[in-house]
Length: 368
Image (cartoon, rainbow, N blue to C red):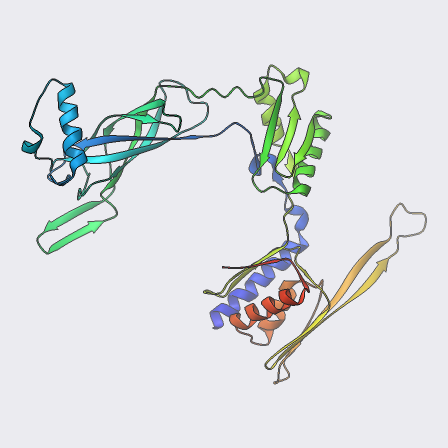
């Protein structure tokens, strides 16, 4: 319990700093958005892994028997399927991700997964396997030694297994045979997609781009910003995108409090606020009051009147322990006050849920 209380107290300090230094939460457009059309493609294929040391599929795996028979037939070898012994062969599914802008002849990594009852595909070799995309076309061909990073040892009732020897990888094991054309900006326009759609963030991104390149950006919706490529960048779209990606912007997010009931962890943002409210639970009592204060600029100065809120948070219990925190009314004040009087994490979570139910907590409360 002491460890949990100490952890929550440390988190409160962290959140107080995050509020105080909110202006430092500036990131690059590159880290919150991507160019539409620049995407990867998933590939999949069915193949055989051969050369196993008796750890392959049994004769009960029909697909292996059929696959081996068909493969040998292509090489001019005819054999009775019932005579096959496939303990050195395993049927596998081969998967890969085709990155954007790869060309014919480039290589990509593949993952090989057993789909039968093979005990291990360690040390096996993947036979040439076409990899298809969702449209049914072959975009790469995989072949090579399979590395599992695991093993199975022992016999009888004694044995040991490390990791998963029925799944392996082949670095650079597939050769790209077809290019996915990504002609970005061919019509003089392109669009950015935000990782977390938000009206405010979209407007800020468009504003940052327009300040740098002129009136070329428009926030079409919370998740997309449409761009008109300036004439002097028509022949250098890569340079235009690189210039946009490096622009600083301050993203905005909705206020949210995330609570993990299993571990007693509470994570919150700096924009979470709470109305004036008094809370009592068992022997704990909390009171939050807020007063508005006006700060007038000096005479003949260019400053403006600034209105601020001064908040006092007081928490007490039967033993007369109390704490007063002069700060804005937010959840970190409540958690800090509860920690000071010895509240358990479950007490804090219960109080947060009650505050949300009363409508005084201005944030999304997510329980995981």
